[in-house]
Length: 424
Length: 124
Image (cartoon, rainbow over all chains, first blue to last red; front, side, top):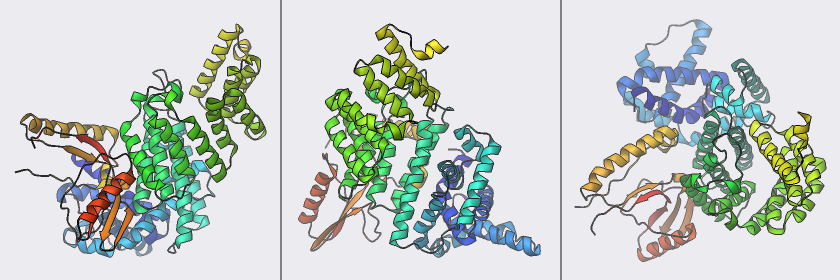
């Protein structure tokens, strides 16, 4: 590994803890970020000569805090900077320093940092952008690329998010158990949003979307290290690992969607699956089921099936019913309909799907699934109408291409060109 | 003399490795292992899953408790390890419980699933 590579890695992994502590000191996101940046610059200068400090996060916090305080002073009185050695030569004082940066704050610092990015008052896109910038340390350009917007637009989005966070007030009191639970839930949602952004844009710019998924998994693991006995965080981590394990199988060489049952299961990442299954095992011992655990359990049943026909659809149906009770939502019912179609056929599934029409009329998957069921039942005309609705609602090219393929099948079966072609 | 070589590192760093870094490190490590395998000197090689996948059984006279997460005390030392093939975490916990019953002194058993296992070819 080159000199700068190990430093970069150390800075990335120390970032949440260091930023969390600096946020506690400065009570201001921008100041914390600036202080951290300053500390990183000094690290890049000092570490190649002195070697890695024993505790990089403690080093960065100490140096960042000093440089931040110094900046405040300088702005106030224009005093002279202390010499570089005083600020960054911590060789002998490191262990004492680590103690002083009291470990007891560590957990709540990171949780607070994650929580300010998960403020439910922020729209999902702002939560994701803020977390990627502040916690993960991605550059504005990287984030802009992931969202397919210009750098200026992303800069503006992040600035707006920060202003909202500042206006809402950052909670600095030590959280009690109820606060902690609430923060954890908000943070879990934010991590899931980051993952989803990567997952749904998987066919976007090369690599960027997968990076978001990896980043979400890293954050989930971080959260689980801080709260090792939370079954829902185990469930979240397992769910993300299981979904990400299929990344290489989800699209074919041309970028077209490959459905779960058609995927080459040899391309699934066994390492991620093993880790996720271990995590689910741990979570189950707590006997406190929650939405993430149930969703992870469903994903695990797919992962355990060596071939699609070995999938335990009965258990999946039951788990979706549990999920409907825990977190009632038409989307959950829609997903259950897939399991029902496998167990009882398309008629039973369609009966479950039809009543959702009012609430899901603007949802791609509703029309896609409905079209698929109607097609299976031989109701080609209605299927075609549903597929056309789905195409209009597709959020990316791969979704639209998948539905177009369905329409082509229909046309081939019924000998009639489909509407989309007629229009052209 | 048989030696166990135990590997320690900062997990927050290794979990921040990119796919390329991860692949490169694993490839280089395999290169090192090959030399010793060919000399007939290398026994089992195991890579553990992250500590987030760990569960710890703590045994003290009169009580046994199960804790999520890795073994985190510093006053005890690593004395040995087992590799066991279990269908579930509960089965692994039962094994650890049996061990703790047979060994009257206090102690902890960290149960950590494996990410990778190569049996090696060392004669017993």
